[in-house]
Length: 199
Image (cartoon, rainbow, N blue to C red; front, side, top):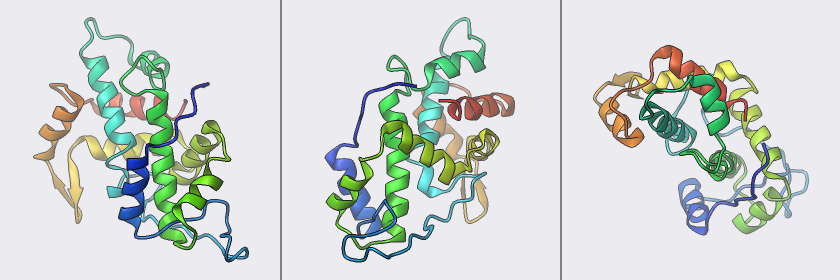
């Protein structure tokens, strides 16, 4: 899907740097150590969510669900979502899609290889196009599987989890975030996740 190049704002870069305690390198090497190897850092499996996701794609999917749920009559969900996600007229605009991918990839790289400066990392990082960075995110985060995206999202909509315990009371807060009176059903959640994988 074509869209404008939208690098994350300066405040987002500062937040990433503070959260990670260092700076990453994206292209597999750092300037000071060209032979350095990258390793995976975030403790995320491809088919469920963890805290590294919470400020990104799941909340954006909930917000666009809320947008659709408020329509009357409610449209056919799959086709509406596939057209709306990444559209600059929806609650989940293309810039958000790019920013969600960038943030996850940057934090992963920071934690994996805190060697290069953040500015060097971002310079290397933005040599990739928006579409290339989104593709890389889907590959590294979800194994390029729509089913994995759907399963990760399903794990979220019944409430956040902590140390293996479901916190059902968080559902109300998630609905507030989505500006909706109801969470998607399991079937609807699968549809949302799959639509996100087809951008």
